[in-house]
Amino acid sequence: MGGLSWGEMVIVAIVALIVVGPKDLPVMFRRAGEFVGKMRGMAREFSRAMNDAADEAGVRDVQAQIKAATNPVGTAMDGVKDAAKSIANPLDDVDPSSNTGKLSAERAAQKAEIEAKTARLNAERMQKDAEAALKRAEELEAQSTVAKAPDASAEKST
Image (cartoon, helix red, strand yellow):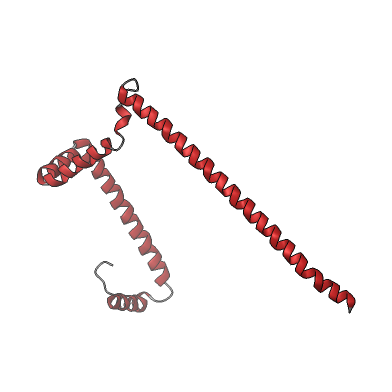
């Protein structure tokens, strides 16, 4: 933090406490904080103005060209990445009336049918599982009712 270690900061704080006094120390810190905030704002504004001027002058384009010239491997990798993005979905540029387009549409329809059938079978399986669980719960409930019945008759007889 500004090249000061914790020990040095403690010494500066003790000296400030002695020189400024405990009564005025919070006011001094507040004003110092406001000053630092204004300085940061001015630096941010200056940096933004310089970036805007560089954009207007075309410096970013020159930097990109210099980067491409000094780093051919990185430029080649950028080209590979762009090519991979274009290959990611090659059927976007296919004419729907061509054989490839017709085959693509047919395969998409088959895919939709398979997904629908899978979803239907999954729903049926889940329904069967739910019915089996309900049947098992009813059996257990009936068993617990039968098991409780002799206890109730035993209590009445006593």
